[in-house]
Structures are given as C-alpha cells and as structure tokens.
Length: 563
Image (cartoon, rainbow, N blue to C red; front, top):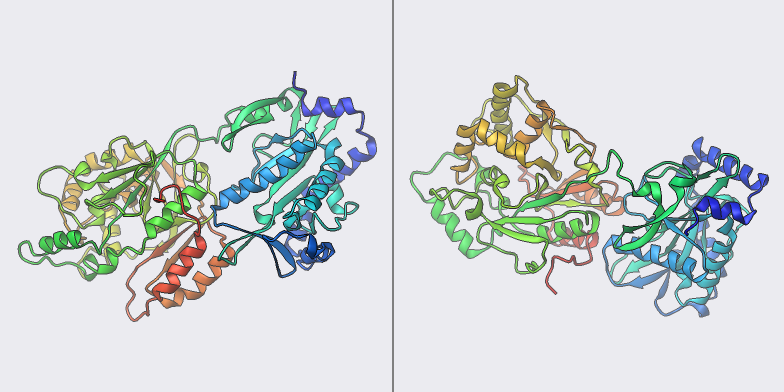
C-alpha cells in the first residue's frame, strides 16, 4: 500500500525540532511579505555570477552565452511545452535518483507546474540535480532559484550556495534556460518547474506544504494519501484531496467561436460589390464599408496559436465564415468545425451579409455549440496562460469585462461612429426589458457568452434582431448580441464583472508603437486586441513591424495549422 507523505517522513525518524523550527520560521517570513519585497528588489547581477564557474569546454554545441547566462537553443515551441519540458527535466532527475514525488495543483500561476517531495529528500534532490547538470551536455543551461523569493539564482552545474536561503527555502524553481532558434526572447526560470518540500508534524499528524495550493497548506494523513490521477496528459500521484471537485472548479465544457473573413478573396469581393449595388445606396457611416473592417493580416493564425498555447482546456472551436476557409487551416483536426453563414441564417434572402453585427446575432444557432462559450474576434489573442475560471464561475455565470470608457449618451445617427449607435440602441432595449441603463463600454476581450441567454434575447427583441440580420452592412439601427448579452445577463443575474487583464493595440495609429514594444517585453496581460481602427490624421504602423510583432509573440505553429 502506498504510504502518505506524512507516513514516509514519520517512518524516516529524520524530523527533529531544529528542522521544524526552520520550516515555521520560513513560513512566517513568507507570510509577512518579506519574500515579495525581496522579489521586487532582486539583484539580477547574481544571475550570472555562478555561470563563470562552468568550464566552457564542458558545454555542448547547443548552448550559447548571453548576458552572462548560458541558454540552450531549441526549435520554436508553444510556451506550455517549455513548462512541460522543465517539469520533465526535474521529474526525470527525481525518478533516476529514486525520489518519490507527487503533483501539486498550485495556485497563483496558471502555466507553471509544481511537484513536491518530502522534506527528508531535500539534500538528496539537491545532490541529484547538481550531479545530473554536471553530467549532461546541456546542463550548463540548468538554473535554480528560491521559488518563494527569487532572491538568488544559481547555475546547477556551477557552485550552488546550499547554506543560504536556498537551502532553507520551501520551494525551489528549476529550469533549463532556452531561446528559440531565430528569436531573442529568453525563457528561463519564469517558465521553470517548482519543487516543493512538504513537512510533517508528529504531534498534529498533519503534513504542511510551504504555500497554499488548490486545497490547503495543511492536510491530515487521510487527505495527504497519494492516489493516481490524470494531469497534463499523464498519470501522476497526487494527494487525495486534490482529486476532489472544489466549488470554484469548472465542470462544464467551454467552446470557442470565431468570426472570420478574408477581405482579399476575389469571390467574396464580387459578392460584396454586388450587394453594394443592390437598390438605391443606403446612408451608411464610412466605417461600414471601410476595407480595414474586412482585411486579414492572418490574425486568425496567431489567435489560434494563442488558444492552443494558453487555453488547451477549450473543447471545440467553431469558425464562422462566408464560403471561405483559410488555406493554412488544418480542417482535419477534430476540434475544428467550419460553420458557413448559410448554416446559421434562415434561407429567406438575407445572405450574403457583410455586417458583423448581424453575424454575431446568429451565433447561438450553431449546431452542437455548448451552453458556455467564448466569442473571439480574429484579432483578439491570449497572451499568457488563462483558466476557465477567468471567464465563468463554477456555478456557470459569465464573467464579463466592462471598460472604464463611458460611452456618450447620444441618439443613433449615421453621423455617429458605429459603436456609439450600437450602445444607443442597446440602451433602449435594456430600459425596455430591465429598467436599467448602461454607461460603460465592453472591452475587446474574448467574450464569455451563454447560449441560452442569447436565445432569450432574440425571442425578447425579435424586431431589433430581424432588422439587424437584414442589414447587409453595418447600420446605425443595429444591435450587437455580444454586448447586449453582457449587459442583460448582469441585470438578470446570469453574469458578473470579471477581471481579465487586457491590452488594446491599434495598427492604424503609430502612437501605439511604444505600447507594442513594451508589451512584447512584459507580456503582463491575459489578452490583447490587435485592431484595425481608422483614426483621423493618424499614421498606420508599418505592416512589417506588425508581422514581426506577431511572429515574436507566437513563433510556434499550433496543432490547427497544416504541415
């Protein structure tokens, strides 16, 4: 029978009052926030110091020296594969040394993996890591740091100071520093795997982790018992309590819907030209037919890369198009479904349609679409790992993203920009249905939507929906279902405000250049929108710059691209 971490530590007779005191002092130090202060004022010069102890002649041909740190040159891959590689590096060393480890459902970081071993195995783990790093050809790129404070970084193949904070820390972070071939971004300890040391208390018969996890820091013997479970595509050992469903866990499927158009397709352009010439010309705002609204910069390719990398938990992806399929799209992938406009619009002469408001108003008619789904414009991309809980609550409520931008209160008019007219028309419907008005806009993020709420809105406002879906181009009388959903769902208790980190970028305004450059370095938001929004008097950003930016953000192909 598999012993719990507590039982193995207790049987070892290696727990003593001195070590127990060291652990609790460390826990109190982290609790009091000292770790956060040290992280903020970390001396980065320590990163390169121990690298000088590694003989260059011992390094393999795949290593290069950059700013005093050796890094391994690897083919471009998704960031989540880098996290997985570093977990594999660590667990392989532990397995080879015969050290029992288990998976930890950590909190606070959505991409980094964490595993744990008994405190009694601390020295054995350290010896095994150093010995392996000195033996393997690329071990010069292996680094370790205090996972709680990030105060000191060491090259595992160099001289590691085990007597200082690293030797007493409750968490080590281990990584093979790498760089993608043809790129400059270094993926180091930020993408490492954490090794936690769990301590036992004889008197209380509990096991204590060095920090919070999805369950709790302190577990009794029964909850700490190891069981088999599926994590990250493999079978691992986890404490029994982590195999239970928590209140905040998402237990329902979540799909993604994209709307996409290739505005350079000759057949599509011919249909658009024919539709534009039908009858007397309608009075439309200039943006309604602006080519920028229909231009494709291959944003969909990069958005799908971001989805594959940062939200692998998505069930199905539906791509809504007008008789078009991207030439590079792997339509054989079972998670991709192409949905033509003819499948979601009635066959009564409304098609073809070139009005995104009309198309969005029909998304809930997609056959097989889950109740909970995310609507993506193709220019919206994830920029770091995200969790389902950032879009829906465990009870199924949508988490919407209101903007701080408050829209002017004006009557709809062809002279106004389309987004102002949409808000004006939605306000009228909201007052009619709920007695509540709205002021704040909705951010250009992935939109969490409830299929049943969208169906309810179409039934409640049939005239507004019918009018919108019969407008071939954007019209000042339109409504748009995703925004109406966000407001209405909050009013009826089916949605609440969320806190998704988001950045807006406009490729038609070169004042955004510093924002592009800064974000490429920081990547400190959950999502971004790379929009083509015409701005009077502004200079567009060079196409080559935008392409380089997207290639740098998403250098690796996704599973959704053809070979």
